[in-house]
Length: 316
Ligand SMILES: Nc1ncnc2c1ncn2[C@@H]1O[C@H](COP(=O)(O)OP(=O)(O)O)[C@@H](O)[C@H]1O
Ligand SMILES: N[C@@H](CCOP(=O)(O)O)C(=O)O
Image (tube, rainbow, N blue to C red):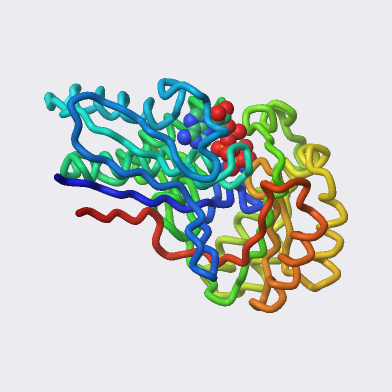
């Protein structure tokens, strides 16, 4: 019997300076698989089973799970192209905490679509799949944003174009940067963390945002990584969202005192990340965050890099 497995990594939305337009995939350097995984096999009728460390935090009924919505959306798209789908049984390994700022819903969505596409012999190209992923992410968080689904699917650091094709561009990576990331264990709803943001920004904020993003993209292409790190500052969301994150200011102060290149909120939080020049520095900051930023037994920290690959498909 054909079985497809799709693993989709965690991601940092916004990367501080690119609200809704910049994202990066994450891979712990110790080889931990930090991401959701789906298994797809043939069945007489559709079913979804959920397992894994955070399965018990998902909605109780399968119909409310975003993976079920992905399956029916995929069926509709196939039907509109004159193709019929055979039913499948999906198992979701829910390894990412919900409302963590690690692109948890994106990880499930990407694993589901990428897995279904592989199972049904690749009817959709990457750009079409990305558009479908963005739509489902929009259903869950209240507005379409690709900054988690794109890096989760494609890997690396991705910049959204605002166009339909290509939806996203890949930016050069710095292999020497390490990211200390820490999930505090509390849940922050992305939709709620979007609702607290002002609907308009003032002129000076808009100018800073545009300048930072322009300098960042130039600096990465020029290999000027210190310059790139110097503009990793969030002028859009952090001033409002940090009030939702107990211990945020202290965590930033420690990261700065250790000489980290940048520090910020991953997605809508509560996960935070520090960009570091060395693995040793990232380990020290991750240790501090483990002891001081984590609020309960669900929290964790990792030292990560940004992987070149995103979703991994295997079949048997
Ligand atoms: N497979 C899934 N993974 C994550 N969240 C899911 C899934 N299916 C349904 N949900 C629901 O979607 C919402 C996701 O909340 P959100 O704050 O966007 O999380 P995150 O920021 O971690 O992606 C929650 O209400 C959660 O119960
Ligand atoms: N750009 C979005 C990113 C949300 O990421 P998540 O991991 O918290 O879902 C935002 O900042 O709202």
